[in-house]
Image (cartoon, rainbow over all chains, first blue to last red; front, side, top):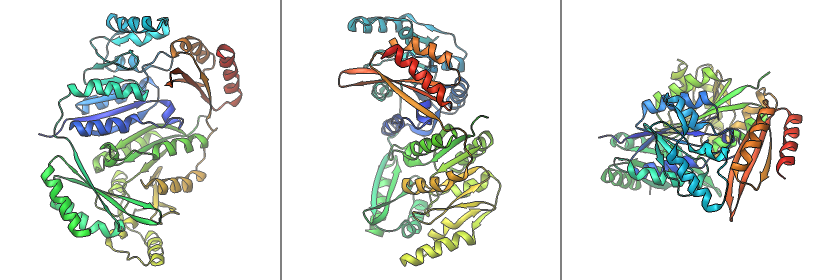
Length: 239
Length: 239
């Protein structure tokens, strides 16, 4: 059975403008590979309702799971929750269970739960909350779309809340061999090897450092025996 | 006149599998902001011809410029050039001008220009070459799509070859104010300010570090006077 597939949507003008370097994509990609869920596509889009609605509708129809990051805070530029509700034609309002979480959290720190903070309890009808052990304000799931925060520590915690509940396939196994030869010398034998192991994916990533050059050849697949056999053939050919 | 718009397509299984952390997106985003070209969307897709053709056709029709990174090396998994040719229904073959660049480069280092390396001279009909001052093998432009290498040093060099030739709009000016207050306290005044300056974009990015918390509020726009005026109002309200 093929692995489940996933897409990610990173919502954030700060990334497209070059101000912030995204790190959530790399984190999620690694966790999904471990879980045996194939990340097929990532889109980085702006804080714009039409852009969010379009990407959510397209990718949620095409993949088993969609993960979003960003835009669920208390400020005027946090429009993700409303955009997700629009994408699924659901009503959205402050929900009692989410409000209760915020009330308890802010009571502990003696902070006022004002109108802006209460925006973080706006949850689309029928959504399931995602626990946020870092800063309380929950994410949520609507159908196959998991809506999570953009702040890396909170995103990581929410991914940790969600992933154990998903059924993955076989974890992706990835083994790397460093070959101190030009990619142009590696290409032909590697191409032959790739044809001999059609169930594996083989990639060559050149490096150039301190006057040395070569490539890291990565062999990936969910069949551990095949990965090991291919790696042995590659070593025999080059090392 | 609004700024020209752009999209980026990052082609690479190694990024989707979590092996490699992309850095080309952040580099290009910063350079485009300086140049006054609005980066509207980034897609990270796999080394798959259908995925590349689909993304190139959709984004090249929607934006003034499209930049791709990855998949133009000598190995079997480098399928970007052929996929770009397919997206524009063009023939592709080894081209004399590209072959001459490789011949001269490999002659200098005494390296054989074998069949694998010659793959890097496969250029779609009618494309314009993009200079690669790092490792010679050129990128190319087909219509509004700039096809560049994935290795960061080469990608950076190719961006440097391409950007001076593009007509940008007003550079994006971005000013940041750190406010040591919870986002929930910043939200209401900031929302009012954002309404008063509809030509600017204002974002709030919370931080939590060493027991202190607050937000960096970023004001962006191409109207320098408006950015400064809004920043002054924000300072007056909070600092």
